Amino acid sequence: MKKLLLLIALFGFFTFAISSCGGKDEKAGTEDSEGYSEYETAEDDDAKKGGQEQQSSAAELIKQGQALVDQSDCKTCHHQTNKIIGPAHADVAKKYEFTQANVTYLANKIKNGGSGVWGEIPMTPHVDLSQADAEKMAMYVLSLDNEEPKL
Image (cartoon, rainbow, N blue to C red; front, side, top):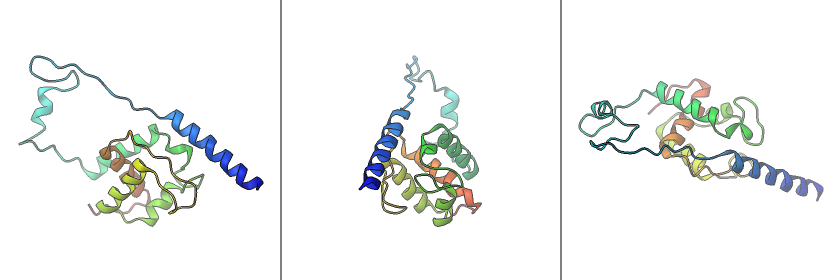
């Protein structure tokens, strides 16, 4: 009974800690006479050919994912090599093949949370993350076993 109460108290503490750490950092820009926000330029349009954005290399997306993980509250429950509350990121990389399907699956877990795969303690959802950012984070995690991406 004491273990259950301790588990509930720890879960409550970490839920509070995680929810108080996050926050979406949005930029609100104003448009100029040509319809560009203060964060967009005509050069940004040049980077888009025929409405298609340039594809970043997997290495660049992984690097961006690492920056997102480093800036997030992931380290509250995860460590790169050691299990804390959730699994070590390296263990996740070992479990899942580096495919687009697994990138999408893990991104959805990051955004929506979940439980049962790595134990009974649920992962807190991160609903303010964009799908693209969650996928970059998943790509970074999957890269930790040095497996080549099969995207």
